[in-house]
Length: 207
Image (cartoon, rainbow, N blue to C red; front, top):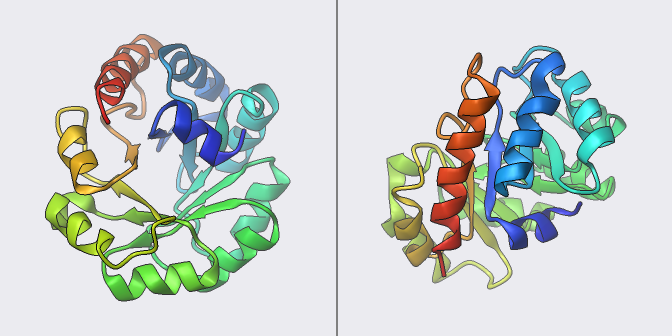
């Protein structure tokens, strides 16, 4: 599934940092059941490429899957080889963005300033991940939206949860990357399902 289609269904990407390959499908199924159709496996998780491979094989038609903490073009190639579609980074690295675009993937680079945002856009990014969002606040997004191209999609990631999503949405954010609010390493599948239901309930009230 393409990132655009996933975010149209639910504007949330689950960050499953620390998930293991032997449990990733069960947690992804719980997310999907609740209505979350985007999953990002950070590359500092155990054997992340194998997790992405399993996710893509099992859920690639019903979810958008890929990697987070992608720092080099070589790692973009690894993710692509595993069937991942989204390339999420904590920083603005034009070489990573360009490689993702070359491979037909969807980059979502991290940014904080207008300069970083426009550097990412010039490299080919349409999705821009404000990170860490809590450091800057919704007002930062509102001011940036005045100068960013209309087609730029700003994500709020880092310190954002279901109780604050509406405020970010009102400021102009149109996607959210949620980590601990959805998944923490070692939690049960039941916990993932319950957290996801709460997040999706909040997402359905947006707009």
